[in-house]
Amino acid sequence: MRQLTDVIAAAAGDPSLAERTWVLLTEAAQGGWGLTGHAPTNDELIAAARAQIAAGQG
Image 1: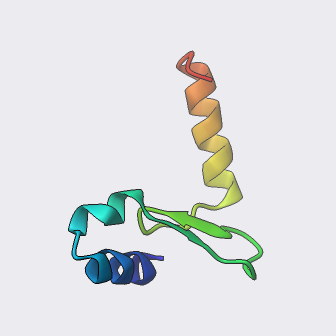
Image 2 (image 1 turned 135 degrees about the vertical axis):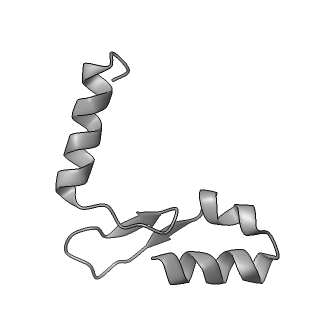
């Protein structure tokens, strides 16, 4: 994910683009998409959702 994200930002000539680039892998069982160079696992997504709910932001 990081390499693909960096390639896109470099091609655009805008390093800040890496922070808003999504990478979609259509043949990945878990972590089939990426945000800011990281492909989150299902466990990470669940933990993030629970944290948002606990903080009253869900």
